Image (cartoon, rainbow over all chains, first blue to last red):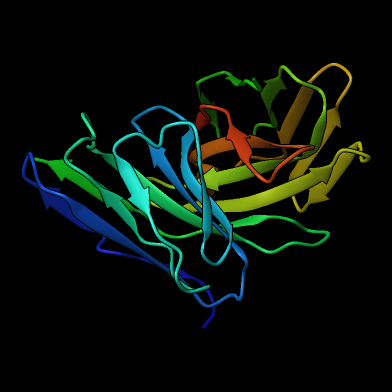
Length: 113
Length: 112
């Protein structure tokens, strides 16, 4: 069963803690993305990676960090420097080619207590 | 910087109506435009992708058009059903780079 998995589905964090959100894909996609979605808003790009061991900042990278050590995995760490981390986080991956569409995971809802 | 706007922000219609969702973008130098569907608390599902050289794409009751020169796209839903209730987002891919820029979405409710 091919697809993108994100875990956990719900995550609660105390202020001052770092947390890591998992994103795994078995679609053999080269590019992976992290987005943040706030209520009633579209998606904003946090980080993206087009190839293993390489990634670029998106529009709202401050307070976040990523790694891309394996093609299948692109974890996102929300650090204590992120001032307002409560949001819905979506991971996506993409295959190059004529269709060029992005496939999305089910999302992780992060709440800061 | 590319900006994508969707109008209306919310729409409520009775079942069976044909409806149009609008998407506009500020920079016409796009590679493609996609329409996505998002159910509450879920990820996004791609509905239609229109390449910059295309004028429209159709899938079942859905038809998306693209007018690149005017920076507009519309998603037409025929004979709407309660199962169509969701948020619909459009996104453009710029010619350079691989990032998508999303609109804020239109929340659609189809009442039985």
